[in-house]
Amino acid sequence: MNPKHPLARRTFLRGLGTSMALPMLDAMLPTRALAGNAKPAPVRMAYLFVPNGMHMPDWTPEREGPHFELPKILKTMEPIKRDLTVLTGLTNDKGRGNGDGPGDHARSAGVFLTGVQPLKSEGAEIRAGVSVDQVAAQGVGHETRFASLELGTEKGRQSGKCDSGYACSYSNNISWRDATTPMTKETNPRLVFERLFGNQNDAEQSESAVRRRRFQNSILDFVLEDAKRIHRKVGGKDRVKLDEYLTAVREIELRLERAEQDAHQRPEYLESFDLPDGIPSSYEEHIRLMGDMMVLAFQTDMTRIATFMLANEGSNKSYRFIGVNEGHHSLSHHGGDSEKLRKISDINEFHARQVSYILQRLKSIPEGDGSLLDNCMVVYGAGISDGNRHNNENLPILLAGKAGGAIKPGRHLRYHFETPMSNLYLSMLDQMGVHQARFGDSTGPITRLFT
Image 1 (cartoon, rainbow, N blue to C red):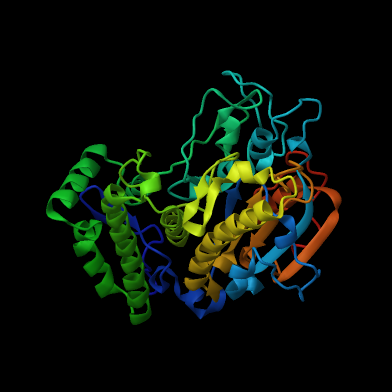
Image 2 (image 1 turned 120 degrees about the vertical axis):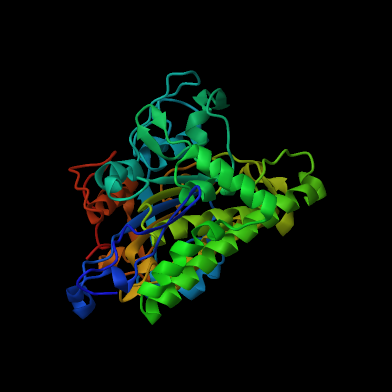
């Protein structure tokens, strides 16, 4: 590859119904970039949400600053501890009743990324606010194939009542395009895969899918010639990177195929559930597949913004596979019962383990002088603190990544009581190059986190 005529950053491998973006390769950089004057990698942001609060004693580190120990729930993140910042003391005041009465679960999800009090309504008239991810998407989304990516594992109704006079739209969404339009999440890994790697020609994509099923082809079979052409043009380091990327895509494709086969051999306790094709019977595999595709979307710069609801707010999913037979929401009303608290902590730890997997995947991908995770800001947490109290102060919030060097992680930061969560989001928007005077109920940029 001639460094004076580098490979275009928006290079795709194309075939029948297929359009696969490539990760950043050295061959895409001009000579001056290879000499050390490269344009910084883009910053990505993601928000990962879990429902029903947290067992806070097992979440909150005892010590502040860099010399903290990860508590029980977060212990699974030990391999990436230096990439984490635990934020204690942040509040979503607009998740409180503030005169609207019960409905804490719906409010906590509706306010989680908006900082705006949701309108108490169970009819067609819903109103929250533009979420932070969509403010960022409006600012930088035009630079990527997809402005944003909305993922989940539970579909959930978009109409009707779900929580004490609040529409289901609030409980089942955290991303809002505008005050009245939630961004519906995709819960089927197969459909996410086809969206990311399809060429958006419906007829061709349908034909490609039929051929793959009939002849047991891989999506890579349709881009093989393009891949060989690129492989011949690039250097040894890029060939390794390209091979690793294509291997990762194929591995996800094989896992999708296994999930579709396993759907007919699901455990007894899932037999009554009608799972669409592509949705794994294993909840753990479902989360990891969705997380892996978010990682690929970031790696290939198909999007820089994502949200992921690991479950809907108020979810009463049981976790029999870790020995918890009761529903999550039912357990969250623990009343101080020690056995229920232990089980809640086990559920929280299970979720954290899946997030740790996703973060370690981001960490494993080289980018620039560091890793893909270094160029990310990934918020993980819940919209309620203690599930029994339904309180909205001192939320369980963790931030992973360095935002391209703007964050010094590996710390536990404790903020003053009632510090708005929106202050964090205001500062994150700034790191995305989307400058706002205020966001939600913010009172100013967050302190001590960003350099």
